[in-house]
Length: 322
Image (cartoon, rainbow, N blue to C red; front, side):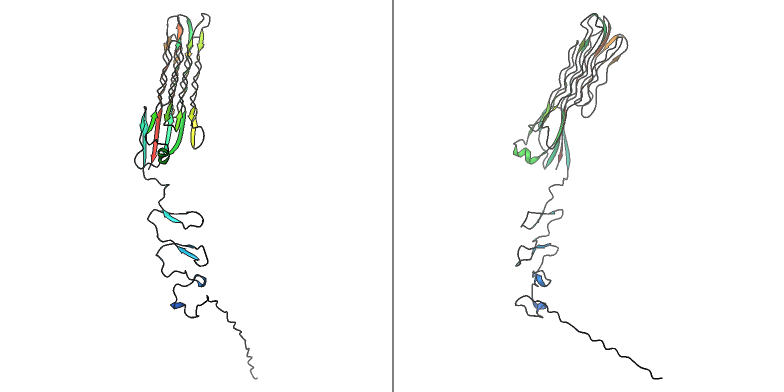
């Protein structure tokens, strides 16, 4: 049998694609042309600086642009707005050091060299506790506790200090409120402030308590209100009124003095307590801005008077970032 071989002829049609060369450029001459144009895959630059960045250009004539520098270690590439190349700039948001200046009494604040921003905390003083007296009568008497000082926290920059001509800032730290005596009200705590930027008011003193009628037998004083922030009360700040002191409690035969309100950092003055004849002075506020507690008397006609506790002084704390 004869074998047959089939031959299949495949016809290939090759189509030449024309390369579009820029006007005036001779085909085959690119190896010797510098710079290679952008529209045929080049950058348009004869020489580029190593490690620099290319950006889109503003016109067809300059389709690419190159930064002239690679910047320095730690710098960040920052936009300079529409129509302008970005640039390398030092990161102004970073800090290398933190310092804390604390003021327990009135003084002046001078920024540490290199300070950029500071967090300022202002605490006003607490009010004194009320005083208690039964005179020569029989009965139970309990005075109220003092209120806590207000609190303000805000941010200030060195630039703001310079712009307001306050590169040396006057600091006021309020004194604790004096206690009431012989049934008198406690005194308010002093205000605290940081220049003209932040301020808070002291807490109100606790109410005094006294027996004024032989048939009265019991008497108690109201707690003092907490001090409010003075300025500012909005914006990039935290501002809070201080807590109020508690009222005294005087059931016949016993007495519980009003508690002094805790300041922003805590430290409330403990209550004075009696369940027998006698008298006790109130306790002093334990931490900055706390109120003093109220005095108490449980008398058969021969005990007392009792004074309240002192309110605690305020404080100003400046945490600096350089």
